[in-house]
Length: 484
Image (cartoon, rainbow, N blue to C red; front, top):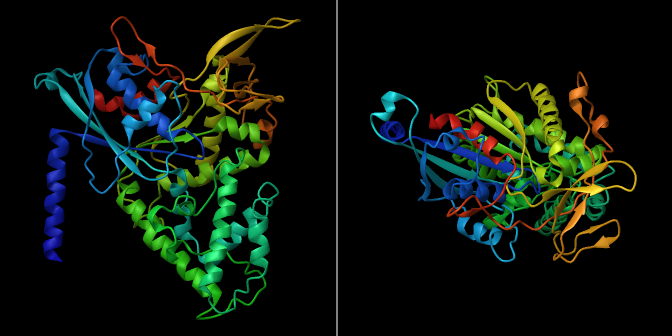
């Protein structure tokens, strides 16, 4: 035991020395359903390596970035983020969107730059390693499970599944659940069938475009090598007013496996990965929630509250034994800003900021620097002006819809560009005080999924890069200060 402690101290001292000579920053990238994590990472790395247009990223504007390149990642037990494969899809002919995040992965991006201070310039150029850790947002939302008993979790999960927007997706599982007696003898076949139906309900919720976030346990959606293990073979039981049973009962079996899930799946992820993060970006599909109505907005509000509770525990909280290093900066990014006209970008940013502030207040969150930005890591549209028969010009966007996309009864084949008016977002700058979720409900928006654009050359002799909206602002907040 003493030897282990001495080894740990030596390792810590070595890490400190390494950080002084060649500092590194661990950047977490996560997001809620369909938020664009993979595209964000690919676009961020591509724009830095290829020298994209980044007018709000000060080190680039000042000409201090000497070069950006990829190096082997520090953690050998984490899969590498397949940057080259994703970039090949985005820049192919025709370009395609890469597959979504399904597991944790990592990529090391190294920036060589000129420092701003005279003293540091005497030692030549400086280097910063940015270790990008990509993980599914559903895993993050598992953290609140650690403070819940199985009985409390069952009650919460059942109540959520019985809401009007989810009940239809849970019907088959509900019918099966009605035949389950918590006091009956434990039954492996019954447990496997119940877990399968419960996971199918979660997957249907995730596929529904207007249900944004709160889908837990996250590993039931992406089991990986845990598929079929007892730690994932459980489900909530309806315990209200029923005999719960003792040792050897179905109830005790489910509770035991729920605790195993927390011990062997949730805690290791946060101990080995999440607790080591220093900066974090959370990607959020605010436009999808607005288009989804009151239920989707309420779901997003719950998720943001849970996420902020994860990031900064208070003193002596139930997270203290798990989380070590505190995250100093958190950026919430409202993605798909290219789906609306630039005149609505500030409005989208204000809506996200209002939702985040609401979650901050509820979660009693304090300490880290939190900002919000409207962003499109890869811009798939351009702006056009349409003439109305009566009235002035109409600000529209134009792009090539993906094959099979439909709007107002028209289905698109993926070859022709179309222009549409996406709708107007409410202007929160004209309002004072808290904006209720109901105030944002009913926003009339029209969305299509578009093909990725062809990369654009930045100038004579410069490599083609992927266009973006405010990606550089995100870079500046997340790690611009580390390049001074």
